[in-house]
Figure 1 (cartoon, rainbow, N blue to C red):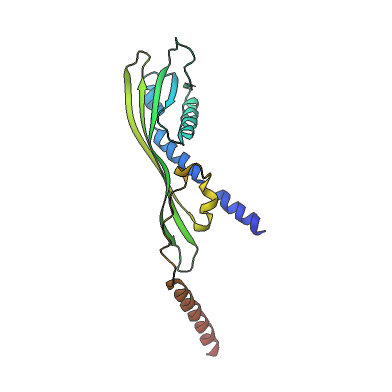
Figure 2 (figure 1 turned 180 degrees about the vertical axis):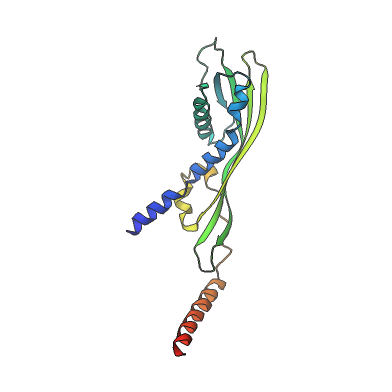
Length: 196
C-alpha cells in the first residue's frame, strides 16, 4: 500500500525534465506569432551550440510550430528549398535548487526547484538576410519533498537537469531539541488536563 501511495504522490510532481520543458515552452511562447508576421510557412530549424539539452529544445519548438500550422524541417530538403532558417541558441537551460524549508517545525523538508531557459533566436530569409533576432526566456518554479529529489533528477548524463542541492542548513542539534520540547509540552498538557 505504501509503495502505491508513494507512486501516486511522485506522479503528481513533474520530473526535472518536465519542469525544464515548461520553462522552454514559456521561452518559446511568443515565437510562432513573430514568425507568422514574416509569413514563415516553412522553417528549417537549426539548434546552435553544444548544450546537451538541444534535443529537448528542438523537439519542443518543432511541436509548437507544427501546432501553429508551420511546416518544420530538421535538415535542408534540397538545394532549391524556399524555407527560411530559424537558428536557436540556448543561452541557458538548467534546473537548480533553491531554499530548503519546512511547512511546520516538525514537518517534512521541502526544496525549491527552479528551471531557467533563455534562448536567442534568429530568423534568416531564403536570400540569407536576417529578418528577426529575438531573445526570450522562461522560468518554472515549484517545491518538492527533499526525499523525492533523487527520483525526479533524471539521468546522470544530463547534469543540467540536476543542480547542486543546498547544504542541509536546518537540523543538527537544534532539531531534536525542538522536537523533544514540543513532544514534552504535548505530554504535559495532556496529563495536566486529565489531573484537573
